[in-house]
Length: 110
Image 1 (cartoon, rainbow, N blue to C red):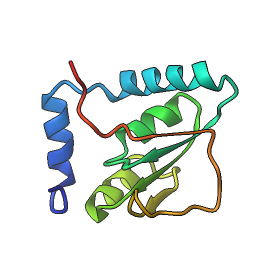
Image 2: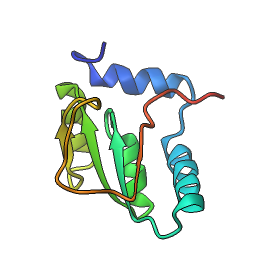
Image 3: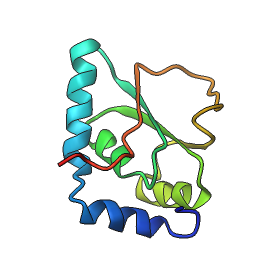
Image 4: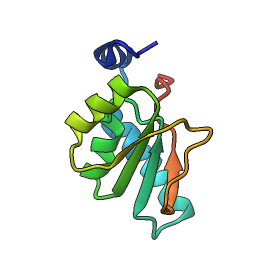
């Protein structure tokens, strides 16, 4: 759906009131309840990188995985210091392990 317009993705979720910063804080709180020492997070299906930027702002060591090239390009512009890997969430393999992973791309239930 977003192969041709990553901007449409952000507009759609923005119109629905999605707050990426608040969601990242909530995800981190859940992670810390289970693993207080967690420092690294893999964002699976990272979209245009808004959660990646929020996780980075929270001080996490973060990387992303995304399938759609237009989304990867936007995420790399938004968070150039974050490694973003092209891959399918069902089959990707990375050479490192993370303390936690998340798939935060779904719209908020508000």
